[in-house]
Image (cartoon, rainbow, N blue to C red):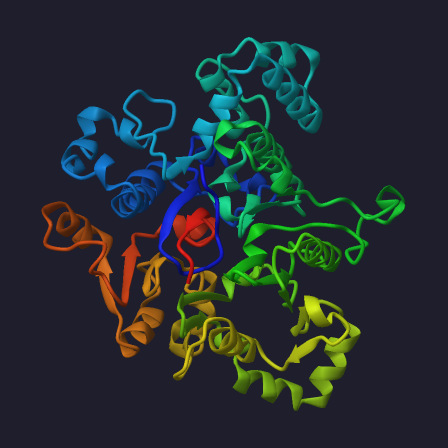
Length: 476
């Protein structure tokens, strides 16, 4: 299979996803924050009434032969919605909308891989020897389910679920024809990283890419450093990496991605001649921001969506406050800084005063935009809607192609801002029947924001940019 991503907005052709599984339905209030959830969510709603619409939309765009003509059938309760359930006979098993659980069950059919992975998971989860033997007796499909949800059909819970697995962007990122693996900052995501490492290195789908997988190493003598020595710890999640052109990657330094990791990634990208330009965007280490894709994403070559707090106007106002500036200098991680390195002139970095300046520069210089570059603001840049809607992922949008994005239906003020810029807003429930009967096609959609129900999905703290790991896109 060909893997190549050199754009945030090129036509999406293959994507790695994971449907909400039963583990999400096992999150309890006392453990929610330990497992990086702000709240408990209703599993059936998040599946049937929200995420399944996302799956259908992806299939119409990426693998229409699997869905067209079957829309009513796959939604019929009598079929138990097996079309959306990995491991079931009726599962769609698309080769373009690729389900992680299927890939995991594939590699677990190899007895040697199965033994290694069982031992590795048991080591991470501190399992008993007896539990290890129980796991080894499971078939591949059941074991894949257990590794993700923490339990099987006829077993008690063996270890915690990994409810964040739906956010596939964070587990790895494709940069041109290389795969950068994540190194999670939170213990709750260690098993995800382990499972994906085995998938990328051993699944036939990624045959030929073993030498193009980038793993991050811990800092020397990391085991001697204090636990909270953030400046030395190497941690990275894919939500902090954006491939904006074939030569340019943005890396966020955030709550989840450290300076040490950003430095290591930039160095490797230059050494391996993967890109020629790397921009480092340091944002405040705050839970509401988490990754850079929670504060901005790309919509078109000349349009971005962004939280207004990072705009040029607001940045200048903050820099003019001498007291605020002095406080931020005393508290590392509270300020925003942007620095760009170029491989051919590494000793002369370029500094940007604001995130808005960087985004305009990318559109103009990397994407050759001649006219005005537009910034759409979260919540239409109206307080308190800008902050409320950023919290529910108004800036975390997935571009299916240039100018066609997917987001949540609940961010009313942000949708209003998109309308002002000439975008049509269409609910996925209206669009799917039109795609089915041919009155609308994916090719003819232009400047469209597709909304998906989000009452439960938004409470999981991630949007559709988070819930996608593109494997193949057209170039800009």
